[in-house]
Image 1: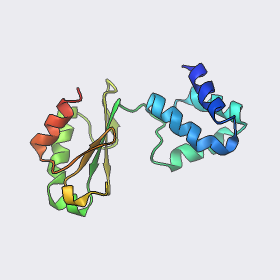
Image 2: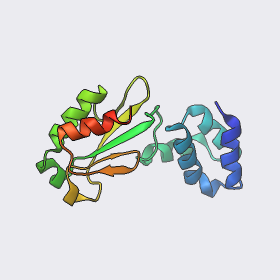
Image 3: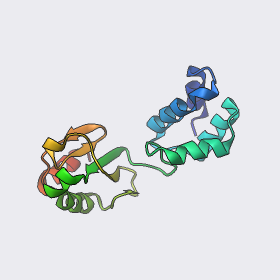
Image 4: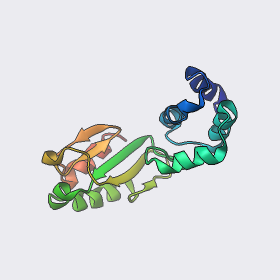
Length: 150
């Protein structure tokens, strides 16, 4: 575990307990998840009980207490995307990655999540990988996009 980097993150926020969420976001960005060792270090450094940190880490969907893939795939399953074929796109993503919604592959290359809306309904079905939006997805296009991240 890279404790020096965690200490740098905490120091960036002057070890202020009020900066806990931002500290956790930075650690999540660095590791793609929140390792227990990192949370324990943050708890000691900020003087925030582990129970409070775990409560926050489980409340917000942005955080993960389990390892996540280097590439995070979010597929919109909202009404507009659903009626335009999102379930078929999901089947294609599951086939190409070998994982289902809420899972991460064993190589930690991909994590797959379904979401209710990505806010660009006119482009449905919409998929987001590492924050980049891909619209008007078909099963074949979605598979090709994911392959380009391998």
